[in-house]
Image (cartoon, rainbow, N blue to C red):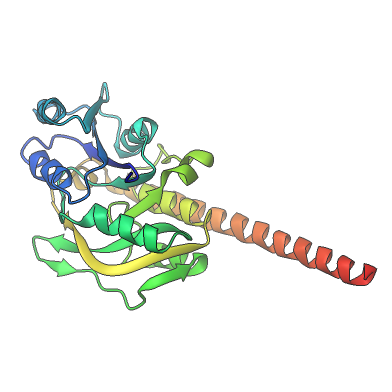
Length: 265
């Protein structure tokens, strides 16, 4: 049987755009999906649109936030509801190619050692594609650099990546709720530091719509943006430093054990 893939779709006041996004997920060539639409206290008809999808397709469920709580709490609610073997994200104003999920699953099947699969994307409405020179399997250090590098073709985004939900559940990964920017980049860094190998490709399977009136542009003032950038960058550096220190201690311990065995022999 095909593994179940959970797709989390946060939505806030997207009554005119959500239909395209969810339709593109439901029309995937890969069918074993659960689509979790999390309405972040919308004041328009977003909830009604989501309810209609849930009525028509048993794979869809609506999680309704009581008030507008922000993207991190919204995604955390989606994580709490997800039951799939694998996990993907899609924003409610974007859309995906019909083979995106099947492509993810093909890569995981071909490369069972990888913790994450990442595809290419197209920025709309300009149609600009992401470009990456290195394709195939990369190690942890390379993936961390890609996620945190300025103008990276992979980026710290969630929506062009697929995750093993067991890894998220085991380590209780969640999004930091006190920041409104770069929360996805911080989440990705923490996740990547839990694995060893990752799969990257240019395959353009996600359409990222850049809107001036999106929540990220309208709801955050300049001071809050500046504060969040400083805070998140500090947290990213901290988790990297802690992970590297733990890895160094582990290598030193293994080396000491090896030396002890050699001496005893």
